[in-house]
Amino acid sequence: MTDTKFPPENNLPAGYEPPKVWTWEPGNGGQFASINRPIAGPTHEKELPVGTHPLQLYSLGTPNGQKVTILLEELLAAGHTGAEYDAWLITIGKGEQFGSGFVAVNPNSKIPALMDHQPKDGGEPVRLFESGSILVYLAEKFGVFLPSDPRAKAEVMNWLFWQMGSAPFVGGGFGHFFSYAPVKIQYAIDRYAMETKRQLDVLNRRLAESEFVGGSEYSIADMAIWPWYGRLALDSSYPNAGEFLSTGDYEHLGRWARQLAARTGVKRGSIVNKASGDPGTFLPERHAASDFDALTL
Image 1 (cartoon, rainbow, N blue to C red):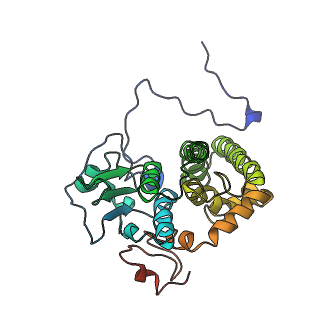
Image 2 (image 1 turned 90 degrees about the vertical axis):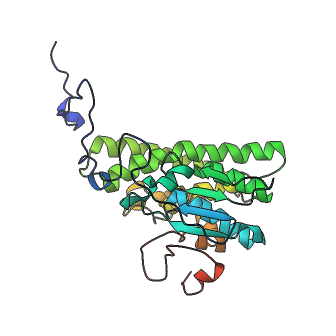
Image 3 (image 1 turned 90 degrees about the horizontal axis):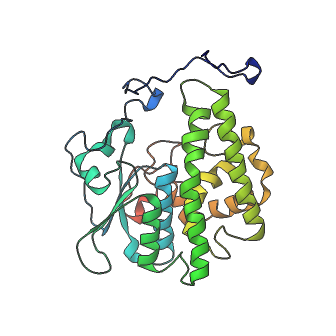
């Protein structure tokens, strides 16, 4: 049997042959090599800090982290004082997500993670991980941003879980190979650019018929989708990605993205647990509303 080679007109390399059994090479993975590993569990002992508020968030200002801080800031803007929270920075580049305290909250060692020290039933603290789970929990706890009508709720949940299932193709797929991979691979970029544009078209078509993604009312579906797709539509995610993907062509998605970007809750939530950026545009930790006072939003 001869080796199968890709025809040269496909512009594809033919160099890698997977071994029969994969083995981990710790240096592989570019800039993420030091934080990715094929096993779970803690690497070191470190307890998590606990502030003064019932809600304790441990996160980083990535799109997944922003979902939760946007919801918390929207809850506070709507007058739900019980949503006051402490947001502690978890620097994943330093492996802080593998500390024993963090792993106890999220055994998957991914941000965001949340502890509710005053659940509605008055019982033991509730741990929460996975951003979608946190959004649903908080929306149900405070009775807002998730419709009570079964059909309307189902539509919001449809789009929330659409985001959870679709965004890895944008972040781990397109974003990784377009911006972060140590080498540029045309096949990978083409594959994930095509899927990303298909998803942008899905949203654009939906927003042509509805003011918000889940329907006529702003919801946790919008808050989950905006950090990934709204920022991409506004060309504020991966450098040069907006031009590369022609995101300006998605008229209705752009309208929605700008509409949400103007909200105070989105402005505030988008910068919490960010550790760098232009002066006044990031807030590594948040422990009170006054922490925003010195920032330019």
